[in-house]
Amino acid sequence: MKKISVIIPTFNTGVLLNDLFDSLLNQSLGFEDIEVIFVDDASSDQYTLDLINKFTSNYSNCKGVFLKVNSGFPGKPRNIGIKESSSDYVIFADHDDTYEKNTLEVLYDEITKKNADITISNYYNVYPDRKEKVKTPFTQNYNEINCIDEDLRFFEIGPSIWTKLFRKDFLNENNIEFMEGILGEDLHFYINSLLNSSKTIYLNEFYGYNYKIRDSSNDKSTIHIRNKNYLKQMIVGYYNTWDLLKNKNKEKYFSNVFLRHIVYWITSLIVSDISDDNKKDLIIGINPLLKKQLSYTPNFNEKNYTSLSKPILEDNFDDLIKKINKIKKIRNIKNKFKKSLKFFTKNN
Image (cartoon, rainbow, N blue to C red; front, side, top):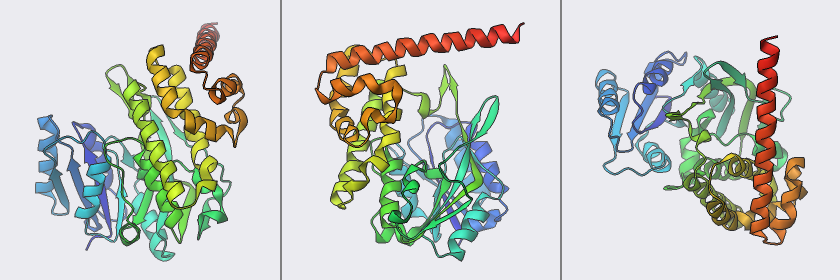
């Protein structure tokens, strides 16, 4: 039996998959102790399919599962990967990212030494021209809890699933699985895990994952896709996570779970090029969540969003759209000024 199963959903990944696989081949844990499971979501790109077949043919510890119908989201492929895995511990990777050389060894040693349910690393945001450490509210490297009430800051750790190693039996025993067919599946999965875990470890100063952010016109990371469907699917995911809190009688954690995500959603709506009619549809859909958050944090703890509170609470959606568009206009002016200042400084 391998020590860790790495589950990788794929869909028309192309050459991007090579870098991820190379980072697994070079793990200090030893590639012979790693099971790699590719779950392809009905790729139409023959290169992707050939690449997976090449890996599975050349390495006995690689497995390929090929879906006949595209599910559209990573939840289903990840759930299939869990069922197909044979290791005691599972982790999930995105096809276009990479691991640091010692990531799996560090996470595995920690989770087995402490008999934990989850171990978590920090990560880098990797841009075409730079690499940045993600900042967190933690001030020390080693952080351990036996239940979430011991440190609510664990809710503020990014839900990104690829920095987290899970004990497989823990997931199965608590019926923890990804939502399928919608976005927000990482958040739901992580919160469900936190609420059930009897020991979670976070290594704040250990940066084990390289999250590559692409933002060109023909190659965008999901984080930069801000169309109506993307924002609508996020809303559906948020409601499912809210239902999770209600069903477990843990609604007292609402603000701890949602504040940063709601601020992100509002920001995404503001910077998008969505029409006013579509903005209105989205706002009507998310408004109960916005109202709930305002009952905990007036103005969402964001000075720039002070003007949004009143129309949200009064269901005045037309006024809310006007204020959102005004914030976008001011934001664009500021960004243009910053770019002009940067150009002036550079050339003088």
